[in-house]
Length: 74
Image 1 (tube, rainbow, N blue to C red):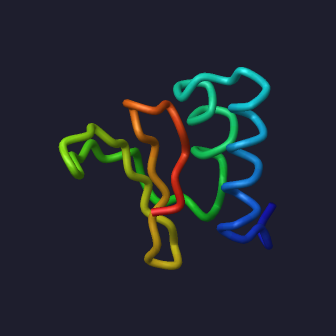
Image 2: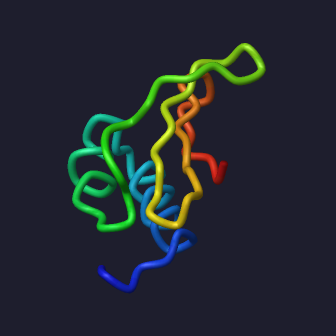
């Protein structure tokens, strides 16, 4: 997975969610082990919605929207 791109990571996360995986499991099984992800999720609020944002080594972020329970390309 060292050569995995942000788009591929998002696709894996979305496929896991479609299969019924919740965020804590997604974090422990896909996001945390990924070499793209730096550190733990950071809780933020955007447009009045609670989100968990994950920083990537590229400087980009991906986010989990707790209202919609979806992984977002931030």
